[in-house]
Amino acid sequence: MSIATQRRHRGLTQFANSFRQDRTGMTGLVILAIFIATAILAPILIPDAALDVTKADGGRFEPPSFSYPLGTDEVGRSILLMLAWGTRISLTVGLAATLISMVIGTAFGIMAGHFRGVGSQALVGVTDWFLVIPFLPLAIVLATVLGPSTLNLIIVIGITSWAGTARLIRAQTLSIEGRPYLERSKALGAGNWYQMSRHVLPNVFPLVLANTTLTVAIVILSETTLSFLGLGDPGAPSWGALLDRAFSSGAVSRGAWWYVLPPGICVVLVVLAFTLVGRAMERIVDPRRAS
Image 1 (cartoon, helix red, strand yellow):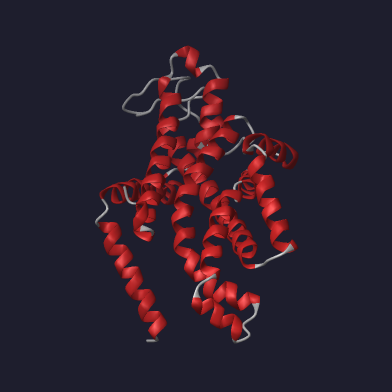
Image 2 (cartoon, rainbow, N blue to C red):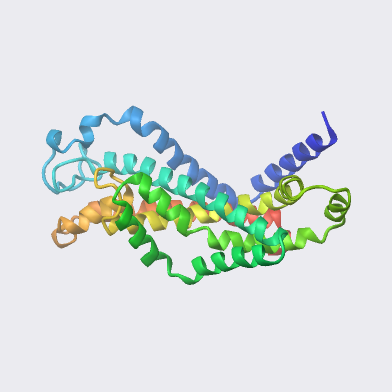
């Protein structure tokens, strides 16, 4: 085993041990594990007929009962089953859009911090433009142009939420650029790609990982907002789409709280869980942030 591999293994072991000692981080991780298990098991445990409008066998806006623990919607489908299936969709959108955002933000941040001159100024200018433009109007315009679908929602959120990550990574890259080992690498004739991929990226990766967990929470809120506005896939029962249908069908005026509260609570719990995990990872990666 090489020295570099041993260092990585030792670092991962120390990180895991530190994370296990963080109570808030572990609380968030347990909540996330429950939702992830629900998302994985949903297609296995929930038959397609349960989500089919034509095969709904419950009463309209039926309150919670033994047969329907969270009641039914406006066409008689089980809210609990749709909520479980919505977990899969909301987490998929959140994780996929976050991956796009992290890749773009990390690439822009490293290049903006590594290069100098016009190229760096152009990258910083593009980043600042995305930071200045309000997220929601831009996302609404792009989602309207591309059309309502889960894939388009992932693309829209991913390409509009990377700027904050880029600024964070750029600041870290500027700090790394002045370190002696990178100066030696430049003196030995290492190219830009080698410097960025072998020296800068490994050093900013812990920060990227910590920021990812915080970004997922923001992305899930964005997905909920856009779906609530009717810009998501109309056939996909995500949490935002459930809230949209609850309000459009008059569930609030009918007092059907079981149609409105559960999706909202799920959104709050997932966002809270990702935030707890992200803050814990921040404290471990940078002890100066500990409070």
